[in-house]
Length: 220
Ligand SMILES: Nc1ncnc2c1ncn2[C@@H]1O[C@H](COP(=O)(O)OP(=O)(O)O)[C@@H](O)[C@H]1O
Ligand SMILES: Nc1ccn([C@H]2C[C@H](O)[C@@H](COP(=O)(O)OP(=O)(O)O)O2)c(=O)n1
Image 1 (cartoon, rainbow, N blue to C red):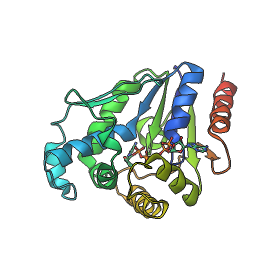
Image 2: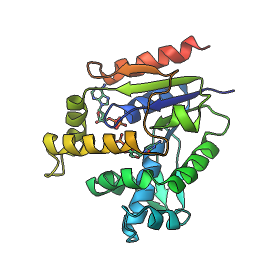
Image 3: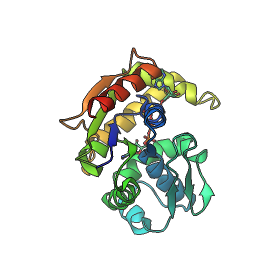
Image 4: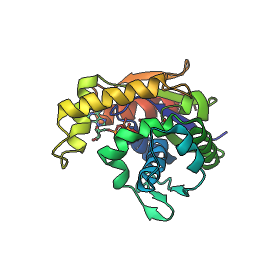
């Protein structure tokens, strides 16, 4: 079976950047499953669905059409034909996404879509449950970590245009999201037993990419 690389870990550990780099280096496709949960959340907010009400979210789960592009050079995400790559990164969506992604009906639909896109493989897929639920038989699983402090500093840099996003605020919002993502009932964030753990706290992005490419080459 063509290679599937499953990349999981909490927010700000470098999953998206490393996954895109590895996909480019190895000529693989790339899937950002977090962007899909963010797209679903953006749609719920736009349509006035109370995101803390799991039954209300579940009732609308089949309505949005979510399309993910898998080119690691220009990843795309659209909802009902509208490019939402910018708006899904807002703090409003970020702070609502854990509630929406904890709803089992949301996860069932997203996982089915993700498996369809992953197909026969040749892809780096990143998220929270790729190695545990979406592709439990992936040939290579990586679990990325980094200190809370470094993760918050990285994400605050990404949000530099938002004056409310100080490192302290980002750190506390991130800690809340990690707690929700790792304690929810439906496929919580957890390291698969057979995942390689890489701590990126003291590594450059290139070093992380190199480490994963080396692991992939060892499989051949
Ligand atoms: N090893 C690293 N060293 C420094 N900065 C990094 C590293 N990995 C990622 N980054 C930066 O941290 C930010 C968050 O990375 P991202 O890939 O979006 O993480 P995640 O997908 O895990 O939330 C980005 O600005 C990215 O460029
Ligand atoms: N496979 C996945 C991917 C993301 N999620 C949820 C939980 C996360 O807090 C949100 C957003 O994920 P995303 O990877 O975009 O978050 P970060 O960029 O790492 O901050 O989606 C999930 O439940 N399962």
